[in-house]
Length: 492
Image (cartoon, rainbow, N blue to C red; front, side, top):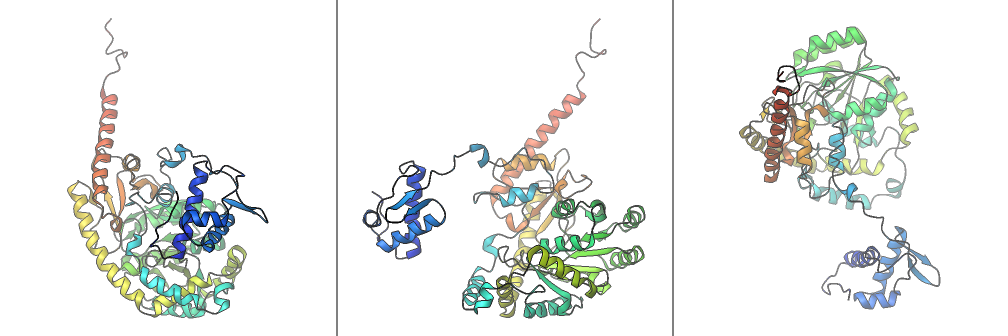
């Protein structure tokens, strides 16, 4: 008989348990499509809960479509769960390692999968207690905050605070030069809509954040990659690309570059801006990792004064990916066009998310969280780099800040092959060519040090590397062994 723990005192838990019992009966075909559910009184007795608990559970199941209500008659099963397809459960090992490969594998990953290739911090590293306090405070907000659209520019108080934060990095922007967005990705999407026509050329770093590739492809842009160095893009090849392709836009990370961890030097920044000015090139500076820095790096937007450089950011990496809040700091004469585009594509802003972020920034909890986060990432960086070096995996540069290590695998090992092998063992890795437009990073891999705390990752990585090495060895043997039917091997 279905019963619940008599010591349970949480009404929400009891309701969820009743719902689970009904779902299990439907899944087991005890309740077939159209079958009448037990009466509220009878099922309350069976489950040893109150009738109001069963009423609430039935109402929720009806709302989600699992059952349906017939007034005066009772509740009936709507139908069985969708047929289970084993082919849809496993990871897509056959999917091409394209710019969306890592994102899809990481976002679709089940709770038991390890994700050293993903681009975010573990949930346990986020300021959950502070978020819950802010949510409780938001619940007491006025009606307009809870239900109304935000203004196109976004919450004024948050924009004022962001202006002060930008100033700390040398970027002078007034609040009316800042627009709040749902995320950093939405910020780039709006800027692409504003600046680009199909067929326009855009420069990116090679390697760069793989979603830049995917987003630019969606905007039908021609994308040209510029090789990345530890101090910024190769400036000579940058100048050559400007002359050959006459690009409209350049998208980059200046500080803690994704995926390499490179930091822009002042010399490269000045030369780059001089070239951009001569070529009438707009620049989008994605500064989403700013709060991971120990010492602020040079910013293109600071040197340029928001003339042709736009800076974007968000709090998805440091605060919460569920609380969607980003921003654009832009030249004044761009703002009217961006406001029109924002209204056309998303109407108003996420007012409640903005209020939550503002609360956390103002009460000091975010500052304390970020300070602890930097120290924790530094420790994880040292530990992960040491583990990888012991396996023959060499970091491209030595760094102390951020969460990414860009690493070269040993000879005769293909990163994409390693990633596919690891995926079959429930580990999501980030192979280099997902980031490289020229596909010249086949022996590189990006590791998220915050996600590398589980010992199983390194065991699976070692196993996957051995399988890739063996595969390469077999391929080399087939290439070097003589064809038994060739003229040199046939006895006449």
